[in-house]
Image (tube, rainbow over all chains, first blue to last red; front, top):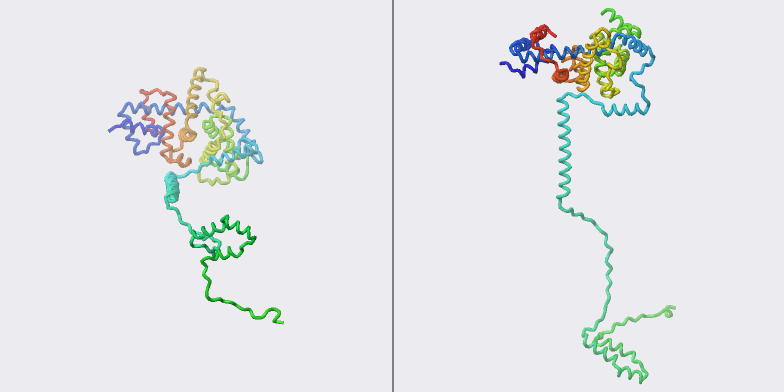
Length: 225
Length: 199
């Protein structure tokens, strides 16, 4: 069954004599049977013929070659013939060198390139996931309890004994008596200050002990002599 | 061939004149290819002379395992690819090499009308080669001008045979579109007989 589309795909190869010998006969028989494919094949061959002629005509004429050959001989005869066609300055050379590095390419077979790309993207995905997990862990984790030992200055215990009259109303009365105007006037008239009285007053309610503990220090500095 | 081998051995021993004789044999072919690749005759001359200088420097590595031209062509393809990578062309794409120096089309003998018509066709072919990518151009030239097989081209360029095949097909399709090749109904049988006998 003839298919024009599939046949036409092979016509350029046929015109350039690249068709395998096994397929050539069948292709030619298909061309004989299909006028459209035959015309297509003829057009391709005509294109190739015209372009070949055009390229031949675009070649330089005979007089060019003498000069070309003399220039080539001259360059070959030079002791240190520069390989690069144009002499460039140091800066330009550096720039060209950097540009060459930047635009350098390495041929890699397609399967190796696919594997490398897969590895690259896999590593990228893993790194991205790891980073995301780390961020999530940091954001979602409870506040961490950090135990620190802090040196606290030792508490100083100060004991103070304060005598407070238990009956406040009596104390208030006593205070009023002491500050009464009659008592003040009496004190002024007698010219005596009752110094013992306030002490006695302050000891109201104080119950002295029945036993007296006295420590008698025997001897003195003079007795020792 | 014996004289070529003798010249190669002399050149390997450091005889520059012998190498110049070798260069004379292939310089036209190399220059034409460089010209169609670069599209500028000055670039083509620089490139082709660079090729010869490199070949001269590396001549001791030639082991006579292939023909001298095959070895030279490998260096040429590397030169072309390196030139493309370093972007060393002078970007004078608008310059018409036909205006720069005389071509075979300018040889007196043909009528003015024929020369003008040829000039138009040459311009169209060059325009197409200028439009396609450098690799497609190189593949087309290696196939069409050098007669290399798809496998040889793929080996030299380090790509698959399918890539070479597609590249050639695209360039041919583009050329056909640009040239507007008429369908030659009456000659189709002849074309088939040509194909049957080989291109």
